[in-house]
Amino acid sequence: MSQLTPGDYDALVNGVRLHYTIRGSGPALIAHSGGPGMDARGWDDFARIDEFVTVLALHPRGSGLSDPAPGDAYGLSDYAADVEALRLHLGLSQPILMGWSHGGMVAQQFAFTYPDSLSKLILFDTSAYFGEFLGDVEGAVKEFKDQPWFEESFAALKKEWAGEYQTDDDLAQLWAHEMKFYFKRFDARAQAYHQRTKDLPLRIAPLKRFNEREAPVMDLRPRLKDIRAPTQVIVGRHDFITNVAMAEEMVKHIPNARLEIFEDSGHFAHIEEPGKFHQVVKQFVFEAT
Image (cartoon, rainbow, N blue to C red; front, side):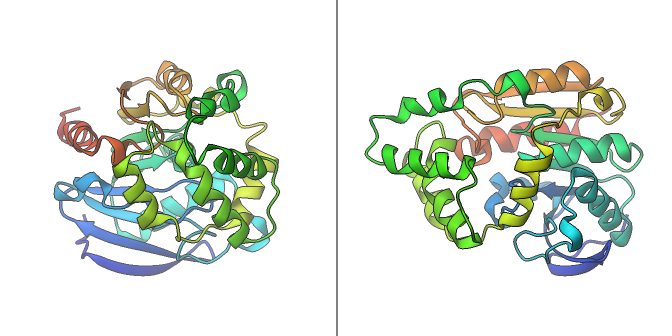
């Protein structure tokens, strides 16, 4: 394996300049963030998993500190090809891949497209298919209706779903409000994270492409049987957008997969239950296969 030195780097990958950060020590773990269009710094401190793995936090094409993709090339296969190209660029044999939210969809695509290019797979608050599993998302957030911020955040959520934004700044302002629904409780821990990350840039181009062209027809389930890597699926019990039913469906179709439900989390288990997240990932990483 190549020696990975902590720091910030850029690489020209598939015609796009990608930014990535290396931190920690131990087996290599590529972390693919979500959105799409979210800044990879939203991983925050990774619940300190960099104490036992070398984290490569990738800023996906069109997001964070990476450049936009030419020709609106923001499909799952484009992102997966970037992971493979970065792996080869760094001389990594079979890293661990962890994908969060949309990044978990990319990770599934990667795992069945390049089955020999990873050792283990972590799918974190994500889905292979929406369909009937999406459920009543508006009803799910109404459990927050007694919160003083509910009306403003609910209005922002509906605008984002309807695509009522024109610029990156428009989207960032909506997300700063709607993010509150993505936690089980918008308590002091969640508020501190919100304060640290609410000003990170968001990019509308990849999100619009996914929402309008890919999400409505996405169904990765027929290919999940081709994933050979041991797989840890993580989901927050109170995640309203990629819920427990979606996690169970992935486990049903991936041959060597197991599920861990975080009972006190929404979409941010690494923030809401960092100790458990740290332990679950550590146990999976070092477990013999």
